[in-house]
Amino acid sequence: MANGDDRRLGLKLLNPAVYSIPLYCFFYLGLVSRSRVIRAFLFIPIFVISVYAWFYTTSGLDDNAIWSLIGQTFFMTSDAFLINDVSKLKRIGQKKDTNELEFWERSKRAVDFMFNYRQLGWTHEPRHILPPRPTESKWQFVRSRIFMCLRYFAICDAAQTLTWYIPVGDWQEHSTRGVGLRLLHTAIYAAAGWAGFAMVYTMAAIVFVGLNVSDVSEWPHAFGKWSDAYTVRRFWGRVWHQNLRRIVSAHGDFVAFRLLRLKKDTFIGTNVQRHIAFGISGIMHALGDYGSLRSTFWDHHSSMKFFVLQATAIMVEQEVEKMLGIKAGNPGVPEDISPGYGKTRSVTNYLLTGKWD
Image (cartoon, rainbow, N blue to C red; front, side, top):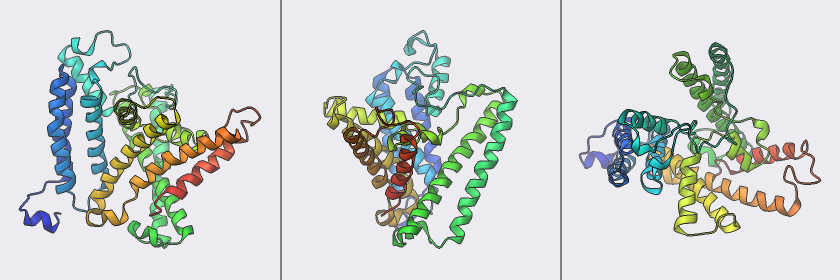
């Protein structure tokens, strides 16, 4: 549904999901191309389509997922086409340079890069932070994931039910509520987001493995173990899904270390890189907010503030840990005490920084 300004301009608006089709087409063409110059030129229509879709086709009633996805695709292409040379990246076991591969091989590689957000099976795969790969048989995997889906569905349903019975009002009215309700509201929102994301991912795993499209080992859990969330940094770096890790890290590295030429492993360099990375994540999520809110976006948006605050919390956390020596694994701090302390702190930080404006 278009707003009044769009109607006065005489714009015939399409469903926002339609704009993802040309974006993926240009993304694919750039990935199979052997020329970095062509990839740079292909970013121009990607930029134009993305900006047009964001500012001229949002209705304020859209599902924010499609706008976050368009934002994610935009930043993926800026990483692959502008910031870095995607042809230098290789799949594990790839012997030839990418530009020496036949078109069919480059095509398969392109599709995998586009949709394999965690970059599983690539030489730059973040093996040290991803959940372990499944090793059970195909049908054991499918059966266990079906039960997981049922559990995730139950959590989503419970969260949605609570929003009907707990007087928190519309999401946009969140900031007008008391502290207790805001904390509870944020916890419900986080549980629904976690379970919903995991349910969709697990359903996809069941389908792709069941149809022999992919192997069981290609579907580790969407999220890490909650027992690893004993600091804010580990919550975001190991427990939460890592779909945006490469995208945000690439832009953070570019701004901090290539554009500003800050030194790595220094307080300034590390924290500028981290704040840029979380800021990019905030922008992608804010685009989803804009599609859902439109005219009231500037009054009720919170994604940007939330994600930047996470980077600030990690910065403070690490400096305090250095001063007090309370980081897990430090001499004199038992491992069975520090993780429990940190998990409580990590969850508390999420609640205190989430949806507070």
